[in-house]
Length: 420
Image (cartoon, rainbow, N blue to C red; front, side, top):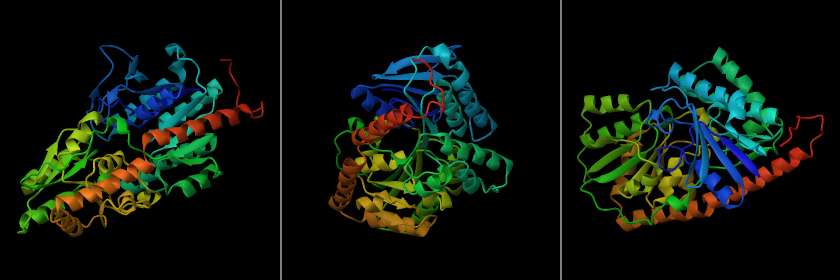
């Protein structure tokens, strides 16, 4: 089969960012299928053009055996109107411009949210080409806006996005969700439960080196890797660090935050203002280097804000990277599906509770290295058994083949078919 995967933020392992679709594409290609990943050339993490040169509007290239088609989109720096323009620009390329790129017509198109405008353009493109459309839900838009920005459900932007959301749920042949608790929510809006398919993020073991023991630092090193955004409530980490710094304890602790995001400058300013000397910020790193960096940690942090949307579940890439790295994890949050608790790979504390987080850090720091490594190995075995990208790709392959077969049997009065 021939598959197009449309995700504005997809990247190869040489960049920092989500490599989910690169890994799925590579696995499907190894299984004999043709897959093209279609994305923006603008690096969402580093905020710079990464793939287009000079005045190029688009570029086709093959990276480690995976074809990518990159489109130009305007730069932006934060979560402002320029970012909205960036999203709309990418969506604007999708439908009208595609005939110019000489890609063979696909058998199925996957459109990935959170860029809901891209998903809408992808669904229209699928209709135009007469092929089935599969929606991938990574975030529940516009519910994330309601919860994060405290917008009213009657806000015009929310009403507009809700209308697009409901259209996409009904228009798609299948819905892939990364969120384990979202199936009832999606089924209610889609009108069918059997079109919902849970396909979480996972671990690409081809990228993971053999785990090693922590190197042994003067200070117990807690590490957070990923987006410094509103979802992760990193202020509670700074609160916990400040608590531990003020108290006389038998353990020296350092917090390392690696990545970028809209909250990073504010967090850095707070650290400087409050002289929280035990917190260090580092630049984002490409996916290929994440595991090398994680080997420098004694333990890892997964922090979520206390928001209703997380009751539908989460599937952040970083949790699977942590689990694969054989390091214990402190999960600060309240989500429907708690990977750390399921794997017995660490400690869970309530969201927003700096005292509980500080106590959990001390509890881990006081454990022998062997006890912490055993927690880490529980996580490694768990992620290998349940979230290995090779196994997840088999599920995706079966789903897409089923979608193509079902679509071919549709009444000819349904979506028009184009000659391939």
